[in-house]
Image (cartoon, rainbow, N blue to C red; front, side, top):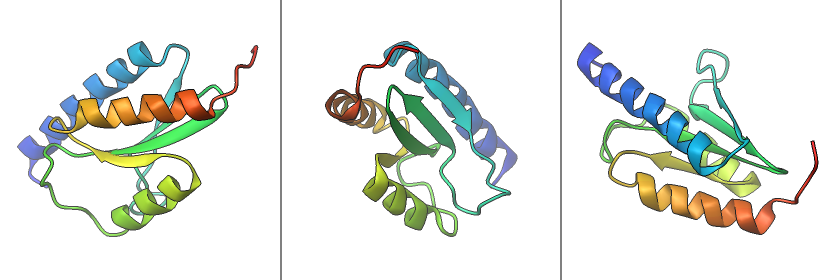
Length: 109
């Protein structure tokens, strides 16, 4: 990936983390290490008793690296996982909010 493209994706991901923390107060957002598991989604979001993963892309039609489709599908079967880009960000976050509301149990921490 070219340096400029990587910078665009990194800027989108940084803003996305802020948006997640604002939309889901108290959530924990971690950046996953692709060096540990090739294709693992970029972000893990822990919220209440639920979790989700997001693979951020600089654009909706950006190419997928090896194993990314596999892990997004596998983690979506387990919980909630999506590819996210500026073009589909709001719809993905809306879907994730519905998922969290449906599946999260209220807990006192």
